[in-house]
Image (cartoon, rainbow, N blue to C red):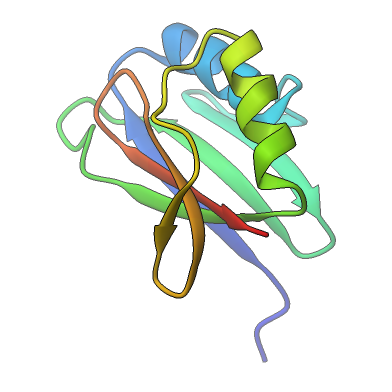
Length: 110
């Protein structure tokens, strides 16, 4: 039985990615399980990993459900992350972002 899930994005520059994902998630990583791997625990049984794997970087996508999409969009703007604001998508509202390597992060919520 599945007890949890980790979204996973591959990057070329772990230091640059740590800065970007720290601004995205509003805090630094919770763990560094091994060299080249950052991990954020986002709730019981789920989280986000950022892995330094230059040969595969930029081909990842993660979808994260957010409680307040408008407030999150404002926080991300204040944190210096570029986006086009919440848009309709897939029967919900979404906010699409792209990390420095081209990985797509889609936030969805009310």
